[in-house]
Length: 289
Image (cartoon, rainbow, N blue to C red; front, side, top):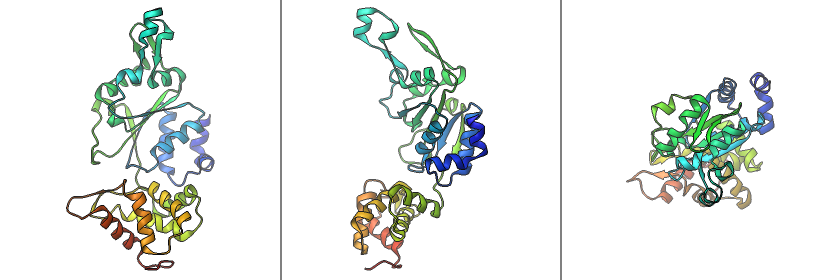
């Protein structure tokens, strides 16, 4: 019932969670969930993949269990493991088994959210296949855990061309429906920045967004900044009240320094940030040299 209502009136969910834009992407995600399909959200860092997934889970009243993909998330950590002292004392009893996030999500009918699925080790990725196919997790000494109704996996990955990003197996990819998210239009990013930063100054908000967007098409920058960077720059500017280009360079350096990647041969990151800020400001209203 809630799913059908959400598909009929996305505006209700968007108002509840202050979601700006994303009508098409939300409709696709909700349709996939209604059809009982696992969802793979693909897009650059900072475009709101985690936010949309958590909004969907909250709106549907489902548990939301998060896993961050990295090489430390082994198969045993994902599914669960036997606690050695308890096993020695009591044997392979249920209380000796420490549930991992996959087993807990399946048992409770929750949404398992896997951030950066393609960073999970291959063994952990393969552990997802049986429960995605048959709704079953087989645990040695314990038996089968059957996924409760409502269990679903929503995973994210950055585009394959991103630096340091691996590929998920064809077998795993074949079990997801794909929803792509890209950077949003400028006016939507301005509204998002205004809402999330709590800053009402139009010049500050537009300048912060302009700087972030300018990093995305700069030939010196391999990976540009997301709207998250614009939000942080606007929040800092709301406190620091920049009046000059140098003030904006200082703010941009604080935010963009650890987030953008500069290509070899294009100078220092500080020089690149200064040039981006100058281009974004453009000597417009409210700007002094």
